[in-house]
Amino acid sequence: MAKKEAENELTAEEALAQAQKKALGDGVFVLIILGVLTFGEFIVGSVAPAWGTVLLIAALSKAFFVVRDYMHISRLWNNEEEAH
Amino acid sequence: MTAHSEVETTQTYNERLSMYRLGLWLFILSDAFVFGALFITRFYLMGGTRPDVEQGVGLIVTVILLLSSFFMNRAEIHMSFGDNQKFLRNVGITFILGLIFLIGVVGVEWRIAPFGPADGIQGAIYYTMTGFHAFHVLTGLIALAVVYNNGRKGLYTKERHWAVEAAAVYWHFIDVVWIFFYPALYLIGFAVG
Image (cartoon, rainbow over all chains, first blue to last red; front, side):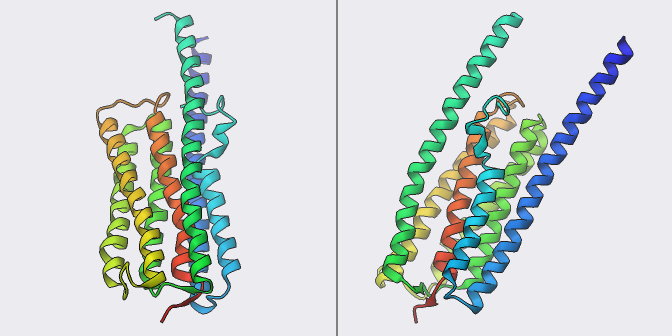
């Protein structure tokens, strides 16, 4: 019985560690996207400054990832899921 | 405290939390309208031209602010898993990067810009947009300093750290605003000569 409880506890700990690793990994993924888009913006802005629409689409894409993954806007309607 | 009252307290806290979140997002929305007005004003008044500013400096400060958002996200994650040391380290890095951004814009870019705030439309637009944003960065830094200090005292737990979440969301909002201001001020259009 005690062994089973210890095993369950370990599994819970492992699940937490995995969840943390995933959350940190998602942050890195978003940073890479932001970096690539920012560098792309800089290149476009340097060679074709009249392409305002392209630059605004890039900005909108960057904002989408920040609002979704860093600001966690979904917490507004998923309060039970991530209560802090 | 009995288990029953503990559950009740947690429920009450979660209810309050959902109200706090709604309040914060409403505040952010209202603030976004002001930034949106500035953004539209820039295109209305300058059209296909942009202020004559150094694009390299703009890129550097933008990368610094994006990095700060990344570290703030890590800080919040570490706190939500109860790791106070890593939380403090990441908030500290965020604070330093935010400070470098502020110095980069107000201390460097404002100094090297070949025009002043009173030099026509480009001056008015550039200094109003960056100045208003810089003021928000300053208030964000104050919020970061407060949560860092409270974290040092051990006031947050993985279950209860609303102030950390609020400071993080506010800091990311500052980042989102700059995501739009950066192309509007540094990239779109030909520099006013």
